[in-house]
Structure formats: C-alpha cells, structure tokens
Amino acid sequence: MSPVILILAVISVVLAGTMLFAKNPITSALCLLGVLLMTAGIYGLIGEHLIATIQLVVYAGAIMVLFIFSIMLLNLNTESEDHKKEPLMFFSAIALGMGVLTFIILALNEHFLNHPMDYSVGKFTPEVIAELGGNSKVLAHALFSQFYVSFEVISLALLIAIVGAVVLAKRKFD
Amino acid sequence: MTNDVLVQTLAAILFIIGMLVVLLRRDTIMVLMGIELLLNAANLSLVAFSKSAGMIEGQLQVFFVITIAAAESAIGLSILVNLYRNFGSIKTQNATTLKG
Image (cartoon, rainbow over all chains, first blue to last red):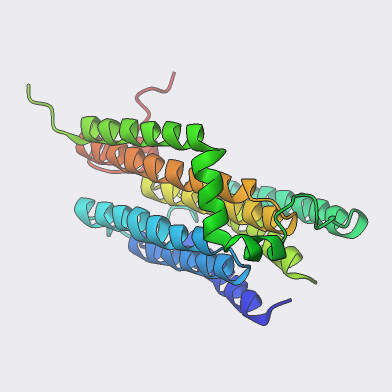
C-alpha cells in the first residue's frame, strides 16, 4: 500500500465531509475541487496518466469553473443551514448511507478475500503497456480505432448539450 | 491492504458522501455538486478495477463518463439559472409547480 495514496485518500474524505456540512456553497465548491484534484493525483499514482490529465483539465478545470461562475453569477452567499431543521430526514439519510456503505464494504471484502482477482484477465498488463509505448498511446489507439463510433456519438452529445444550454439559458424575446 | 482495496474503499466512501449531499442539501447547486461527486467516485472505482484486471475498456468508459458529466453540468447549470430567474431562489422546495 502506497502511503501517498493513503494520504490523498484521507484528505479527499475530509474534504468531502466538509463539502457535505459546509454552509456556504462556495466552500462546498472549493472542497469538491479539492476532492477532484486528489482523485487526479490517485489516478496519476496508479499509472493512469491520460485519465489523470483529463480529470485535471475537464473536471477540475472546466466543470468547476462553471460551478463557481454560477455561484458568483447568482450571488448565492445566503448561508443555508437547512439540514438541521429536519432531524428525521437527516438521521434516516445518514442511516441509509451507513447501510449502503456496509453492503459495499462487505461486497469488496468478499471480492478481495474470497475471489482474488486474476491480474491477467485482460492482455494489458503494465509490462505490455510499457512495451506498446505507454498508457496514453495505448488508450488513444483504442479510442480512435476500436471505439471510434462511441467517440463520434459522444461529440454529437456534446453538440446537443451546447445547443441545449444556450436555448435554456437565453432570455425570451417576447 | 493493497492499493486496490484502499482505492475501492475510498470510492465507496466518496459515493456515500455524494449520495448524502444529494439527499440532504436543499440547494439545487448542491444537488448538482453531489451528482459530480457520485460520478467521480464511480470513475475512481472503474479505473482501479480496470487497471488491476489489465484491461483498458474501463479507462475509455471513464473518458466518456467525464464528457457526459461536462454536458450534464452545463445543462444543469442553465436550468439552475432559469430556476433562479423564475423563482428568485434555488431552493428545491420552491420548484414544486410540476408536483401533482
């Protein structure tokens, strides 16, 4: 177990908890930004360099800029302390979360202890990836050969999202 | 405890916290941020499993998920701007016009 990954994991859990309980939306947005940066660090540490870069550029860059821009545009600095007003909802949600977490931990336990994963399910072991020219090259090759239809469809989805966002956000001229 | 167990546990905890954010907060923008946290946790789990199994399909799937997350947040935030314009607030309990 890498101690650096453990440190990043602890920091991201603390930041996510702060995001859950922060009163100000801008605090929550900055905590979410921290969680996304820590996740990018973990991706880099386990050797997924392309995904780490995309996480930094798209998630921590573009999406968080959109969120912070919206918070500042709408002037949402009203401190809302509303989850304390409904203690029944609060505690039932916490109990539900703990229940789901217990099930996930049990499933992971079952998976990792009783069915140890065969690390050669796929053919892309770290040695093969290094031989083929690195993580980014392998992923890009698969993206533009095997998955090119998905790539084109996702570009169409982005175009539809751009048009939809503009249509939804523009003022009506009537 | 290997790196795999650590990363999967982290993904589970982040997913639960994202779920709690969606359930507990009453601001629409907090609900959208909770959805981003949920997607991020699912991406982390997918990448770690795919890496440890020696496959690259998981990483490509995460690439598509990140793209869809960007589209989703753009649409969601423009709906948010509309909500603020029509109700003067972004609390979820104001937008009950469609409630039967």
